[in-house]
Amino acid sequence: MFVMTIDQKGSSHADDGVPGLLDLLRTVPAVVPFERSVGDEVQGVLDSPEAVVDVALRCLRERGWYVGIGVGDVELPLPSSPREGRGAAFVAARSAVERAKKAGDRASVAVDGCPGTAEAEGVLMLIGLHVTKRSAAEWRILDLLEPGKWGSQTVAAKQLGVTSQAVSKAVARSAWVEEWAARPAAAVLLRRADSPRADVAAHSIIRD
Image (cartoon, rainbow, N blue to C red; front, side, top):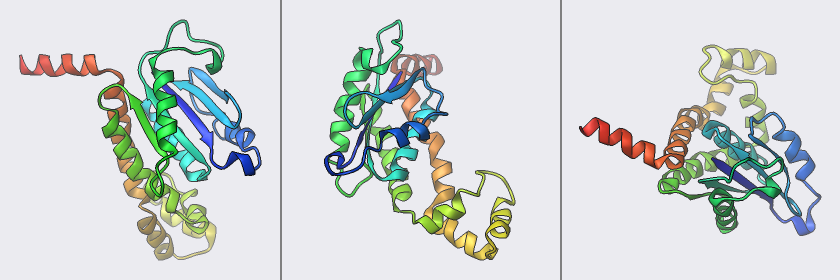
């Protein structure tokens, strides 16, 4: 499973951002829903790597959060609150969020736990770098687009009253297409890290 520990940047001199973040993550399919764990920190448990990628990028877009992702076992039965959770994934998430705080100018996301997490972290950091650099004007356009849907750029241009060329330039400049092409890769790497024994077995079957 995946445990996500998300800590607010500069919480000692900033307004409490947890209520807004919880509202942002309210629709995320989590097996243990996100809630405030301690101070200005949020924690949740997920079993979908795609959802983990989505949450990480939502938080990076807001720019005010350190994102730690722990991959590994969670003690069963699952708790009703992440504050009651135990297991290797919780320990890894704590380690990851502390590393994310040392990211400097890089995307403030880290992944710890099982073998293979470094590769997942690398892809998330590359995507996250583009996400964090986007301007409000670019997001105004990107929020109207649908990934993989032909003609969505034309529709967005009409809604905003701008040219299709302006939308195309914003899409290219923001690496929006590249983000959505790389999201599945990050999810695949997280899934493999979460099930290393199954992955090894699959490779063994192929060799045999």
